[in-house]
Image (cartoon, rainbow, N blue to C red; front, side, top):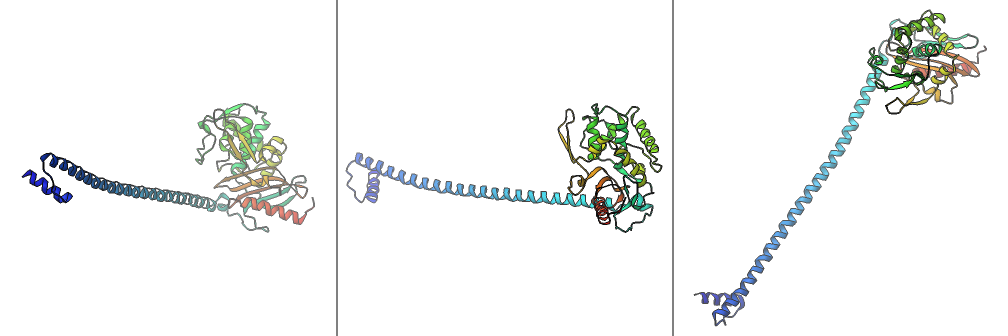
Length: 364
């Protein structure tokens, strides 16, 4: 039965039946089995190859999809980041606009806004420094908040007290702004010389620096403020009052006429002139990183201006403020602008005055 089956198999596979012995049948069977296994193996290998290729294609598709997804996510993240930055800038612009349109002390007092030169400042006062001749006047007698113009008096008291400019002073919690909640680049624990504090207070209107200058005065801040008011009285600044050394309080007030007297007094000190008109300065607080500061008045770096002393100021109650001593057409001129609306309007007002003086050439 087996032999017959073998014969039939051999015949069907090889086309002949000449098998006479079982030994020969076994040999043929081995050969046939080997061929069969070879065919099965080839089929299996082909199947594995197709499966592997399919897996590779699927994996490649997944990777491609993942790459596309990652790229799309990156683009989306970048787009979202731009949207966030744009929204932040828009919010800051809206906040700034709200601040600039908020009624100031001058607005509440009903000061006149219109003048021959169409200045944006509610208060303007321009004087020939040498002759004291009034060249332009607008609400110069009204006492208003002066913001960081205060720091000119702060510097005057420090310099006249002959305090050690090399003494190291540490910024403390007492120097935090509890009036407006503003920040500062000077961290608590930072140590700077009195000279450096004075420099960035005048040039960059650094509030913590101004606070530390007042706090480190003999007797502390109360004694310093008393000295500020005493100096104002000595100069004949009868419409002036100080309550702090930085100008963050709206209770620091003065008239434009009074501020001309302050400018003239501060101008006598080369250190105040130098520090207030510097455009850039770097300080290295002990134990902290290097800090680079810039001026708050871009006119000092302009080739169109020859400025001998300046100070800017801003709080909502005071509006934008600016005081300067400058040489115009060979003439020393002192100018005061208070309660101006718009970030650059006070600088534009200074430009209008300069252009007007240049065109008029008024005699001294």
